[in-house]
Image (tube, rainbow over all chains, first blue to last red):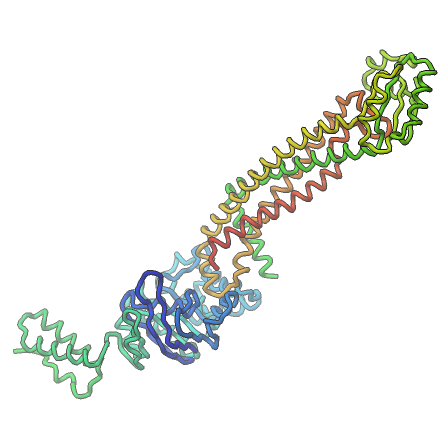
Length: 281
Length: 303
């Protein structure tokens, strides 16, 4: 569905935004794209949408070689890719129905199709009863559901989500993730860039981590915070040492949390919960 | 179907939202195209006058009213003998008087000055070559019995000079104003693009084609251009009919002939000419609108 072959991209006068990235994402996968700000996540998404072109290497999306894709064919590529953003990007003067219908109308779908498809997708995101509301009458979570409905109404092959839960509280975020999971089960490939560790850790899906433009991790059933198993081992040892020798209560609590996280990250069978001292006397 | 309706609706929403800017753009188009149109009409009028006078009567030889018949006939035979002249037509006292009565029908004071006897007799001659008029003038001017020799090419020449200066001035201003119209339409469209940037970004995102996004903005420019041009066409018609009424009131004796409108009258373009100019204006206006909006769309829409 998505394939990167030795892709590099740099902007004028700056270091490489992406350096020699090769990876493949199959149809129906759910992938988290993680990494700090400036690590190249946005560039990655822009390359997929052909908002930017790769300097080196080849990118295939939905069977198209983006390097050879004619300028005028880009819109047709984008019809296969739904996009969801942190800031929702709804049109404030259109109703929920209007916002979702808009994305069908502007690609020339008939009124008949619009009237059939929009209620379906609003049903899917659970907003049938708010079809006539304006975006400013909705909560953040509801607005994001509208945005997802708009991205999904044309049944794209790929759904790109750029920090879709960035503006939402944890409970609402969970609802959004359930929705994305449901969409993913319709064989839609979901690629989600995020900073939300707890979501990544609970979902346990493939994780692709970028750091300064390098692909540093590509792990199936991964978690958010793992950079490198060896490094994680060292941190674990450090954390245990801190717990066993520390006297400050705050430090102890933090240390214990860190150990638990690292243990679950590494998934080492040999270190069980019991191995971590709950209390140091 | 849906998309045509949609494009038109979006266009009019844009026009309505930026009504003040659209109005400014339209008014500039009106002024500039009125200048262009006036230049065209003046040019056409002069062309009409020139062609009429060079293909019609070439030279008029005015004789003294109380001329003896012998002088009239000797001038007549000299004219006939001259290789420069193709044919002549003698206007005698009574014909001349009829002509005067006809031309000055609305001014009986002038008609009363003349009688059949005092009306000047005229030889109206068609030249073999219209450009020989000055030569004919030299031969017959000052001959006994000849009061005056008139030919229109002098007048036409002077008039052509005046009108070509006038046309240049009009066209120069028109070009400046056309530039201003393009810039104003460009700015109006830029504003429209900015005010709809959210919609445009969503359209790009969900895969609307470039032309689908561009067309409403280009149509907006086109409408502004055409609307301005139609108004300018009206202005041109108005100017023509005002000129026409002024000219027909103040037409002078000397330039009048029996077989067509006077020189001055001919200079006022016909309604047909004005219509042709108006059609040209609509095309120019459409071009201005499309050009201005296309540049804006190319620069600010980034699709």
